[in-house]
Length: 340
Image (cartoon, rainbow, N blue to C red; front, side, top):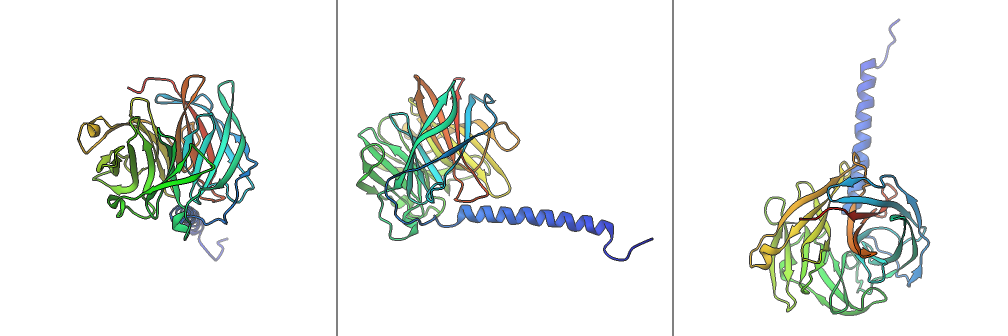
C-alpha cells in the first residue's frame, strides 16, 4: 500500500542536503574561528602548566626527504593554552611557541628511541607587549638574533617587537614598523619571521600577494635597509612559518585550512637570487600532506629547526584557534635525504 507523505526519494535528497548543510555549518564555524580577532586573555604571570600528550599514529612514515619521528596531540586545562602560531628551538633543547593571544609556551620534547613520546616542563606567560586592545596581542612568529635578542612578529597591527635575551622572561628592547607593511591584510600580515645567518631578517606576509600565488615579504638587512621581495607560494595555501638552514635557505611551512580542506606542505626557498640583488626568491615543493596521508594534520602554523645528537630535526605545531573542533599537534620530523 502506498503511504501518503514525503516520497522515499525525497527523504534521501533531504538527508543529503542536511548532511551538506551540516558540513557547511561546521566549515563556517571553523573559518570564523580562524579569521576572528585574536582572543584577549587576562594577564597571567609566568606559571607551570600541566600538559597531557596523546600519541598519534604514523611513526616512520616518509614524505619527500622527511620521516615522521613521533606525533602528539597536546591538551591542557590552562585557559591560555592553545592558539600556537609560531615556534622556535631554544639552545637548551626546549621549544618556545607564541600564541594568538599574546602568550608564550615553553616545553621540552621527550624523545625515546628516536621518537617523540611526550613533553615535559611546560610553562607559560604573557609576552611583555603593550596591550591597548586585542589587536595588540596577535603574536604569529618568533625568532632569535645572533646578538641575543628574541623577536616576535605581530599581525593586526603589523610590527616586530624585540626583547633582550633568548626566550622568556622578557625585557622589551625595541620595536620595528615598516611602511611597506601598512597595507598587509589585518589578519594576513607577518605570519613568518626568519633571521638569516648574516643577521638579516625576512618578514613574510601570509596574504599580501606579489602576483599569482607568491607573497610579499620584506628583507631587512642588519643595518636596517629594507626592500620588498616576493616568495613563491602554493595554490590555495598560505605560508605560516619558516626554519633557516645553515646555508641560508629556508624551509617554509604552508597550510590550507578553510573549514572544508585541511592540508599542509613544506617548500625549500632559495634566497640566493634576492641576496644577489633580485626581487624574487625561488622555491620547490618538498612534502605535502592531508587527511589522506599518514602524517597527522591540523591548522599547521609553527616550524622550528633543532639539533639533537648532532642531527637536524624539525618540529611542527598547529594552531587550534582555541576551538574544541581542532587540536594542538606537535610533530617531529627527521631529515633523511639531502635537500638539494
